[in-house]
Length: 266
Image 1 (cartoon, helix red, strand yellow):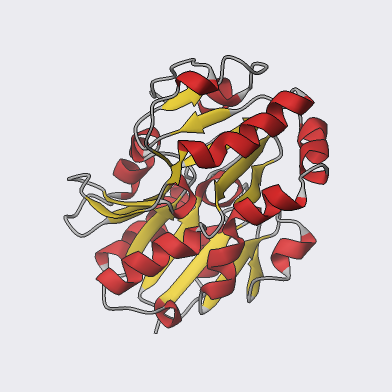
Image 2 (tube, one colour):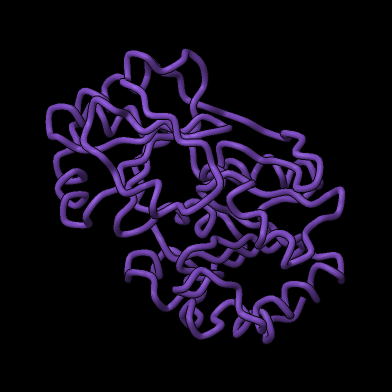
């Protein structure tokens, strides 16, 4: 029995102009009121998506969000952390050296703010994220010690294509590199994925992946699409993403989420 619906944002729940359509809003609110857990799953921090949480009414004490692509599971209203798994600064050294060698930009995120690396080329991330976050420019050597959630390479799509093609075996062994958008390439801890955060949340609710329906469209959604009992891929997803799910629905600009949910027997 499906008891939780997990949704990626960009390219999935959100339209191309970054909005939740009235039709999608209506069905998700109905499910939430019926006791189905509605969980947003994103690479962003919670304060960057707060307007979507409020729009859907996900403000009960037991509502949570998967953030940083699984690295942090956080309570919506109280911001209590249910699960957190970061990556150490020293473990990002290999990535920094790679970017320096190839002249790629890099932004490093902790669990509170973004650190664009000033000793590398400028990235597109701050403009693309368009959120009320603190961006503090620092050289890599001057970054504070501690846990970071991920690193992001944000630049032209063809440059990121080359970056993926040039990844060394050592880097593939150390990081989980995923394309969340054409102009965003993310580097997570090797074992990190949205399904990791969802695993912690399902356990909190005394549920399993047999109780999960997930929606996604991109590489950073693969883990939760494969793990869920029902993995729904948007029509705008690439063929290899569609192959990983159990179902395909309409695209994100045509209420694809609502199309599927309105027909599903909960």
